[in-house]
Length: 368
Picture 1 (tube, rainbow, N blue to C red):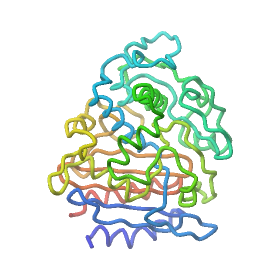
Picture 2: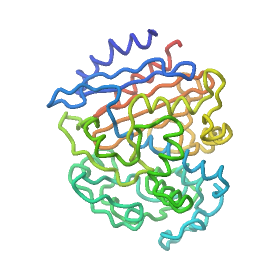
Picture 3: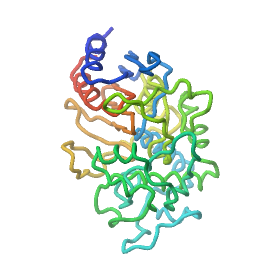
Picture 4: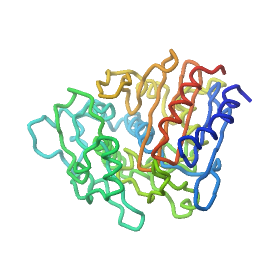
């Protein structure tokens, strides 16, 4: 057991109580292998069901990093040019007319949140209501947010009235960083049009299963629902389980162990296995991890954008990472490829940021 694992076992249960959090799952990667997996607390508070290693979480915007693998797969197959106008590949939808040049929007800019597209997130639909399609999101045919999601949007200073509006250009492509789930919904459509398959099937067949992620999915199956942890608000009230309408932007489910496997695949393996593990080439992984542009944001965190990934300094080292947040869910993963180290944390609460931030700081400063 590493010093960091011992630290987690003492720290996390106490922090869950202090922050009024139901549960958290954590994985640690050393030498590009999962060295520790922990599940703390409860998957369901009312029924006293403990979190387990096979509990499923919405990983929220970490989906974007995984979706980037799907886009790069199309690049490797020779059917997509990252720097070509994205509309040349689309037949089911076009950007609405505007003062901005839609022909300047490329897959690269969409992956970096520099395309100028609207809609920070895509909202969700309760499981007893119809699933909205990628076309519905792009054309603005999804319903307005319910009060639970409106409150969540306001909590994070997002405009709840922007949801349900068509995806459009709101500034010049390439001009500035503007985080956009709408942009990743354009990429979701792109994958469907170029592959001839629905997005969930393409990702399962081309990315998830080949990496060994057999439980991870962009479309939860009925038999998996009993293992999905219950999401909770910051006041420990249960939140309805929403289907995230934008799958590429935030709709993936995974277990702590499988998300850690994905993180391992973003680095060279312990025995020299190539980054990408044969699903993508090491060159494609390196391109996703290349710090292309500095992201000018209003938050006090400095990072550069890669393709579906963020590049930042953690503990003095170059780290590749992404975070996620949906109503009732918080997630983070980070890898330091040069050190073959990684960290993953999944939390079934909207109030989990303080926990994972503390943990990642301790992890970055710990010894292998």
